[in-house]
Length: 461
Image 1 (cartoon, rainbow, N blue to C red):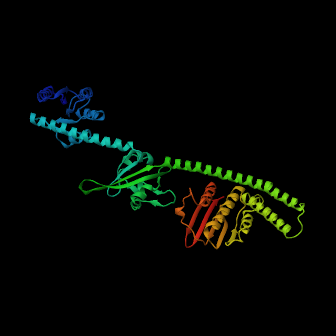
Image 2: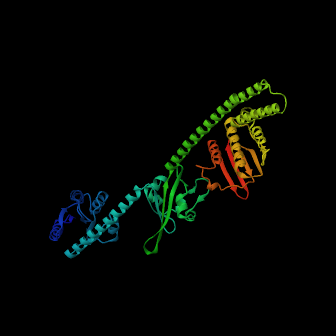
Image 3: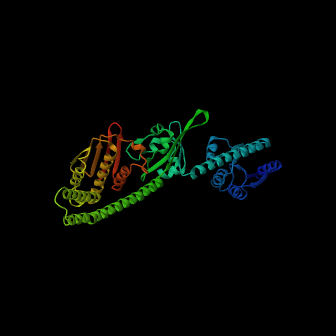
């Protein structure tokens, strides 16, 4: 049973309406002033209020309707004998569901009530659906925007309001390219909405961008653009993306952990190399020297046999020194990187590959950087000798302001860098990459079967 509040200060009119509505199956309450109407509305929560515009007392019908509207969502039909423009303008803020002009008949009264109650029901359903939609959109972490056919903002959820520190009423109608300042994460290139439309769906979703906000540039990703068809052929653009700050932080933390692990691994390798070099030099080297001394006293006559033994022992001792030096070059502590590289290359220039080395403006380097660069060159030379089938190789070392650049090229058979399975093959490339990453540097490989291979290493100083 629907409930109706009749707010009319004329007792005769009030009771006439009361009896009419009660006879038509409504639950009816009466009020005889604006103040009483507010009280009864809060007490009984009627489905509809019939409110006389002009009532005696401190609050007239219009003022009472406005007070009720602030706290209760109850439809109001005004009862009035006044139909002038000034009166109608006065009641607009209360958004009435209709007017009934006095005098009125019962049929007119009941039909207006039925229409108002039905209209209120429909509007409440629409409002509830809209509120449910709004709550759903605000509950998701993604930024959700709906843009009109001119790419102006038509609807947003609270995620973008929080990012831009602007309310919907400030963003509504604003051109999207003015509200959303988007640029690349890696370059200064800016992106308009049309630029983003040029990406394929997969590329757009995978790409990461920066959104300029009042406080900072926020990394965004998982971006989607979709055309939505509205009524009457009107089209909208659904624009969705996500704040990926936490994802970036987690990724950077993972990279930092991996970098520390690699650094620790490399340091362990260097320590082990140093230990082995010392053991070889002090152990095997001393044994070979001892054999040379003993050989002098075992009675071998002068001649070919003695000369051959001396030669073998001397070669063995030289090889021990070379192995020891390659494991842990003692010259890195005392001489420049260039001198050590020249000495390294001299060992291989008797091979089928000719190595050329040049250097310009190389600054004084600390032992860590010097050691890593030496190992990188050593690893590259080893790869060239094993796999390249090259005739010549060029190594260049340059000092460039606050960084040092190393290039290593060969004219060999080359390989496909994108096809490297680092877990099983090409450990040399992987080792170089590990060392470069531990120095916060950059490493690229350019290789094909027609022009050989070029390694480019850049280390910040």
